[in-house]
Image 1 (cartoon, helix red, strand yellow):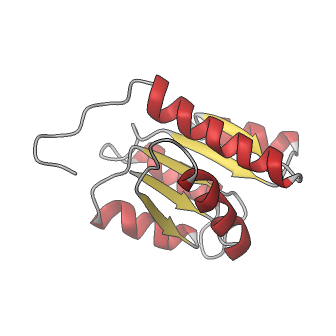
Image 2: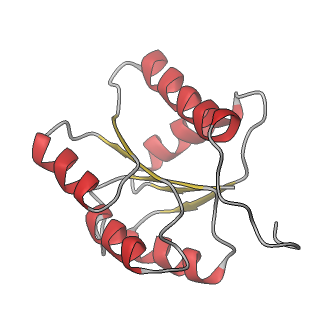
Length: 137
């Protein structure tokens, strides 16, 4: 399961489309702001991966990263920042808050889709993630 935190409806739809085109599409939960993301994380079984935009309403991506790092139940969930910002300070701030990767959204449609699909294959096909408790989804 993947939690996609994105406030842009068009970027959300495009990312979903890219993930749906993979050989084994993940189950996707979506949140449109940082508060909604944290509510989902506390009320739904934690996802295998979080894809997080930085510029979110109500609670920024950096605030979400800070809360995740401080929560013993959530801090092991890998987080990939997928942002339109290429600013070095944003990259540094994300890694300082324990982001596992930082990707800049490609402006070219085909490049964006390829990047999202590569991200999905890497995290779900190659990386070994912490095991889930028995009986969890």
